[in-house]
Length: 460
Image (cartoon, rainbow, N blue to C red; front, side):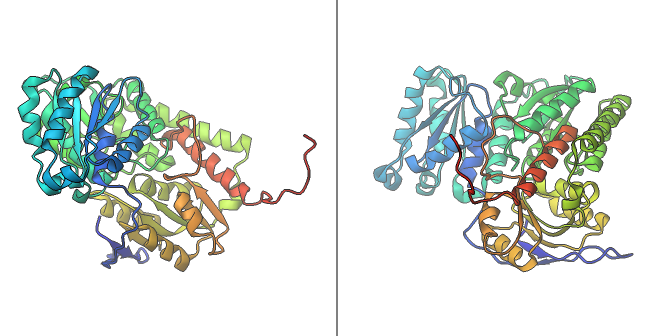
């Protein structure tokens, strides 16, 4: 998405949303570089080995991606060529070749080679090295050119997905369709700190409607499943920030149609109802979809009625949302329609093609007049928060620190980076996801009133 400041005008006949670009950028991003996104994606392949052709410092991004994918350290392996000054100046192809050959002792089913800026700048021919060694090792090698200067982590996800689809999918029998089978794309390109919970919910919904997940690109997915991607009946992109290019490739190369395209992801009553209805239509399970919707909406309403929804704290509260497009766009309708809040500021740190139009449509349909920043960095988000001064901010730990001196009373942490340790993955999508969001929001709202000063001496 282009760097912009957007101030939607009121909903009027014959008028849309005025999108006026302001080229203001800084070097204070929310997102890591392409190497991190590519490593995130590669590490979603079960039991793989990821080799970072990089200095040791850049290798820390691979370690961080390992945690985001919740990879199993007893199966998944990471290596690094540990390039030093000599290799950065004179090239590290020899070091890369030696490391790949030595990796044979690890017995990995596949090796991904991801690249940092240094070796690509000095001209290391990573692809040629991998081609020369294919016949000398007993595992496939997938090179991914993903130097940080190529883009942010979401672009790195797209680069890795492209390499996986082109090099691992079986192209021989694309016409053998598996009815009601689905490829799930880019669930990990998401600021939900427990995005795996969303993926579990989507899998459950597909299964309840009689479908089958052919492969997840990528999370805990075997190479054998990836090879059969060409036989899938449809694909679902679970991110508004990355994965669309992969869906387009599947459509062009194999005729695999994208389902639920153009719909905000299923967060909140309306978005979930629309998304499940479309999924049910695609799977020929309209009645089951409606049964799931009725059961889920009853669950949310009954739970909130019995266990007390703190609606007085949310009703008509001025809100600022700072998130990625994956969480931020569907969150708008949820907090506006279901919690009766009034978003006055929307800062989206990222978003892929088509998200600008989706956001515009949501703002107009909801009748919202909000200041909007697209491709926002930390500095511009902070300035916008200081200008708008909402009563409640929905964001990350970064915003928690940013508003400390602004007099903004309520901070609700929903997106990564987050200052919470979570042992259990909690979905944001679907009906249990609504309750998870409400619980988090309500706890953070009540935390504002908890004393920060100890007033008594404990007996123990």
